[in-house]
Image (tube, rainbow, N blue to C red; front, side):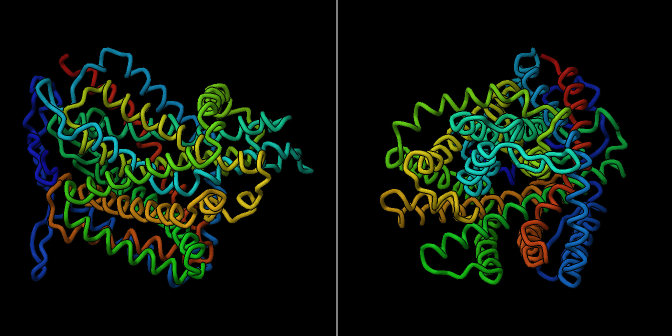
Length: 548
């Protein structure tokens, strides 16, 4: 295996298949970079992407710290405007990404190999899947794996309510449910919908585009390279600068949201096990401590850092899943996995419809937020996937990135969410339903043997997912801000890692707390959705021109 900080891929302009017109770019990797030293600290940064991104982030942190009430008002306005005014846009765009991926899987383009006909994979399937899963879904599944199925089940069972203006005020998905069994199936289908094909299609579009234009066209591994078929040489100018800057912002705020969720859940877990107070002070301490661990991993690099942590994470996650299956209502859980998968496929057309919906709260407060969150994560996860996917065919890439993680998410939601719902419906254990959202996972485990041990494993999983996300996110942001260089000086990765933690802290400390985190992620996700739609055209044109 190779260390991708010192990848042996061809430099810009040196191609495995040089016959294509996209090989004519005169751009050389790092030509716009500024290199130098500040004392003992070296730097190699893209001008002007690094400067604009860094200064804007510093200004944002200062504004949120010194004017928290005003900042919260702005964040709330952004959240309301974007979710209510652009819900159809987020949902319709996500549908396009899924359709594109499925078409490419069955098309002749699926035979194209990333890196050329002779390229071979650099990572085993197990290492590859571990990194995909840890980077793409980690903290979110731990946070929402129990709470979201319970929420949708409860709201679906509660039926619909309509306000004086004729608009529904309930949070039930679609038209709610008439029976308990239907509420279970609809609740699980809605949960799987938010973690299945659509988010992974978002990641797959970005990852495939970056991998193809980097490995098959010799362009720098940065977001702008995917737009060469659209902008030509102008992609190295301001159109490309704007694309990369948007990618940095989207990634920073997407990661900050996940880090904030992770800190709140870890705080709740430590409170349950050791009596740690649940407050912002301890959450800041947790973010600070875990960011410090992430800094060590960042400096160690991809092989010794992210890969190792991802494999540890996958092992712990498998152990926790197996424990819940064995100690929980296993006779109910295992057959119901197929039942819930069937429910997901049954309700998928209605859940993914961008128009004609009456379930406005569910559509805007859940689906629009999720799609904006996944889109804001897509530069980070997509580039990370691209960096570890050289040598795979397009079909192998899309099946592995789209279908396999989706099935893992179906299993996770079915087992954890199904266990919690079974406790409520069959055992009368309502404590899990009444618990605060961040602690519902631990409350579910309370009703099983060895609750202290499994809850501690759950906390460790949250923390390691936290570290993995911060680590791999820092590597990706630094690559973008270094003009596509994957071996830029380590202090730059440290800088971005520190600011990911700092943004999570200042948004948690602001008047809106988690709401502020959600507001920023959905606001940065909106402009980047437009970027992704253009990227769909670019990757299709690129694949169409590739010799097969």
